[in-house]
Length: 116
Length: 113
Image (cartoon, rainbow over all chains, first blue to last red; front, side):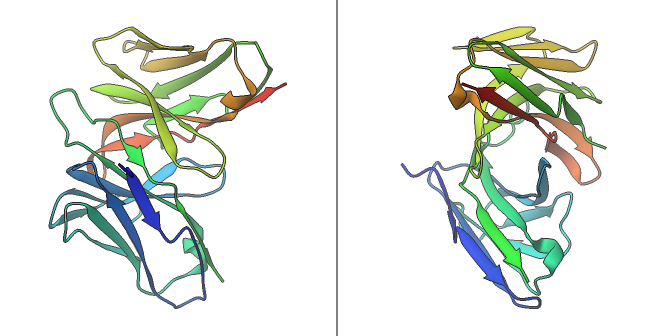
């Protein structure tokens, strides 16, 4: 049981390049999330998904796209990377929201992205 | 502004002492969760407290929730060097992008040996 995995762990891009970050979970969770974390700050939600084939924008979606073609995978794409996208990216997953509110989120180890 | 905000931003204590971190939030909640993040790692869930609960324990962790004051506290007793990490509270909130789960900026805890 691997939990939540992210690839790659590190990446350096030049401005204007594109890349895709892959998140995979083996817990059969309905919900998946992409966050970015900048130095000294909490997590900011980029996009999220409440099920296969559905995605929604979070707090900071500009410059990113996502896809959830399979329940276990959630992809984050940067079409034209900018230095402002230098950050650590975390993927998380959880069971769907129930009557008691949001459930515990399980996090991946993160991807450290630098855009030059 | 953040739904949840931790206080203090940074805390430094000696091993064996207790550490208390506070979280304030703005709107009504269903539950409040605390997470720990070791340097360079992903967040790990510590404890969830529901809006109808006032106190919850897990090992050396004690969480309280006061919905009238819209605040929560995390107490770590008999701290160890391994407790050095950032601690975040998170709550559900109705924000511009829908009903979602929002993290505060965190408290950086340093436990000195």
